Amino acid sequence: MTTRHSGAPLLTDLTSAQVADAVRGRTVVWPIGAIEQHGPHLPLSVDLILAEAFAGEIAKELDAFTLPAQAVGARSLPQSGGGLHFPGTVYVAGDTLVRFLRETLTALAALPMARLIVVNGHYENEPFLFEALDQVREQGLLDGTEVFAFSWWSLVRDTWTGSEIPRFPGWHAEHAGVTETSLMLHLRPDLVTDERPDHDNPPRAGVYLHPVDVGQTTNRGILSSTSGADAGLGEKLLRHVVDEATAMVRDGAGLLLAQAHPDRRRPDPQRRTAAHPEGKQP
Image (cartoon, rainbow, N blue to C red; front, side, top):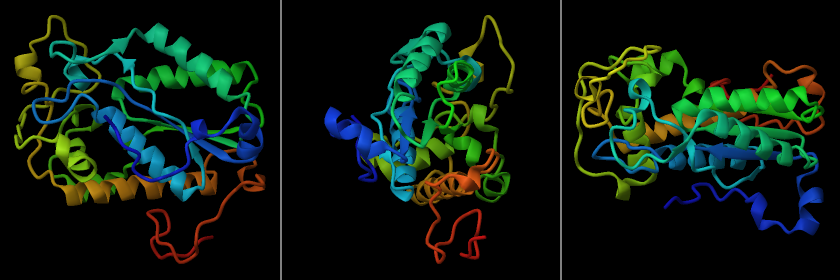
């Protein structure tokens, strides 16, 4: 079970008669996650809960609508999720996921929104999400719509991990580790057990093994260390990612003609963000 963390309005609460006018020129945020094992101390819903929480907070900052989270994602891989050797993971094949995402994005593109933000919470989803988006783009269905799609950890600055997480193993190996455990302790402590298992030999990124010895690559499904996890670190990480995401969207970083967009929303000039820590905006 997941909960809405921010109170941002849900697109699905609108009626068919209301939705076109309500979203015209506005932003829609879609979280996508997965049902995947996360060791003996975290629930199967971690990737779903985190995607939903980040999306909800980003939507609140940008006065945007949210969509219900997509719960089923790509298969778990041993080097980034422990693989399918542990019970509870529910997945679809990559080609199925690309088709599902492409058709869902095609339907969403029919709405007169100004901007779509897709927040991914499952490591293995990312290439399939980007492929689906590119297929929809090639059809011309995203013409006139800004799109920001990212995995939440992609917005974490190296300076943040360097100062907050000693011996950071890389995001591929942060599965059920200190960051996800801390975020869950902040967001849903009722779902976190008292165990804090560590895995002292995280797997390398970008390596496929067969046959794989999950007893070496994981500790009961955990790829790195949970030591040092706490709710305060989770709250700090949540705010860091939300600040980075909202600054990126407001600045239109990397987009053509972004500053000309009539919906471009500027933040409160007194608000301090990761992009503008002094609290002043350009």
